[in-house]
Length: 315
Image 1 (spheres, rainbow, N blue to C red):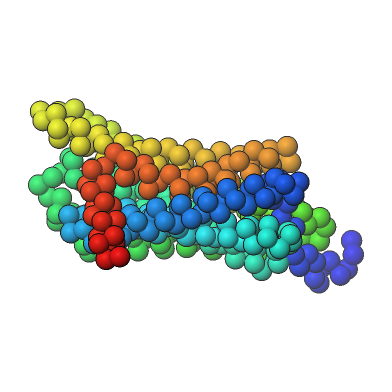
Image 2: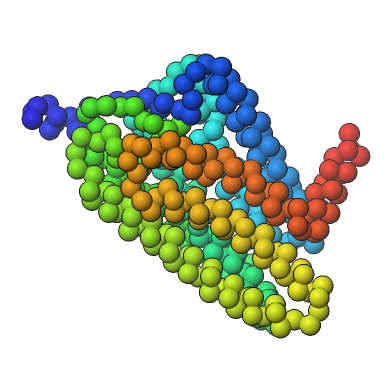
């Protein structure tokens, strides 16, 4: 073993992100599609935030959490897509070691926050439908802020754990990342030191991050389903299923792709599939969330319409 490798733990100072496609024509198509997706995602989520802020009817715990989710969606897509668009414009594929770590940290911070926020939203629906008489007390503004603060603390712990663990690995050989952003499974493939402990940590923390929230969400919705089926009002049952259905759709999309990506340790052959899952995690999910929550929700639709009409009247 080269003695320099022992003193210089990270010989690689930058990585090469191979991206989604290789040919220049396809890169132009990818640039246009991803720019459009980014603008739609940011615009859609900002519209949701604006509607929640300006419409007094939406000043409820459910929409407080939805507003936080919209802000997270903007953050998630901003961590990965603008950097990728910049590389496509400049025809460079390199990213520094420090920038790669930063991107990985913020991606896992925001994705982890998503996990816990979706759980808080399920708990909110459980209280609203199953405990309506004590809902305003159990889901007060103080409780809402505590849930969000605890979610941030857990997500920060998760992101720091993985980022610090990654800095213990040596990167002294190949530096081509078969992805369009920095993520753990692809970086593990490039390490010239053992990644066994890191992979075990990823699996264990991922199991906790996915397993505990999913169990709580399932338990909440078992109680919600039982309560909704006992409702005599057809209109009340329809409204409950509408709000819960939107949330469950987002949960299934988020956890389905997340479990596929992190609950198995991919080989080189799986990297192309990882790119597809990465697109879903960072682009498709944040873009679909505003549509999912607004298409089946007349309150949000009405608020969005009033926001748009208000803007037009000003102009």
